[in-house]
Image (tube, rainbow, N blue to C red; front, side, top):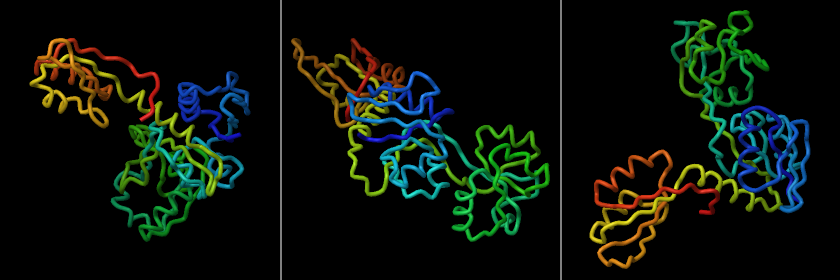
Length: 279
């Protein structure tokens, strides 16, 4: 059986479980369940702490895992990412007291608090900057106020939490992270079906199907509006002056594309949701 690690809590857990369910796998019903066997698909799911998943997969104890790119890099695991899953996005930045830091060089010899010491250490090492890292498990933004650090490196969304702590962001982005599907190094387990299903879920979420009637003489222009992934499907109609067109369109472009097609001369424009896909 394919052995898969799934985050047991938090946004990564909720989104990973939702993807697996959409892909047709058996998922846990009780949050207390730590192990679920999907006999039909020959797969076992182990629900683990998000921070531990890269370690288990990297050691080969499990074949595949869902985890954040940040956690993968911070673990220094040998696991390999095979897909960006498009959820759990986060941005890592440096922050310090207002007006005290202007660029990375100002960090030289300073104390930097973070919950991701290896990630930050590797980033600063590549920049040629040495600091004293202070590892914390959470509430990193209060480290400066409490006197245990001169600056922090943490996840930033709006920046409001940092500002409330009297800090401001400086320097470059450390990392843009999101959830990844990772596999064990040199694994002989076949994870391709799981990967294809995850990619199918992403496509089904990102695209819709456009069907419309188009004057034959305007097909080239209509195809430019809805090029699809490879190419739109063009089918003849009883009226030879018209053709039927089917194509994939990004879901966030639905109304704009409908407006363009209608103004061009297309009619009977219909939009359908995708429940599953293999591209």
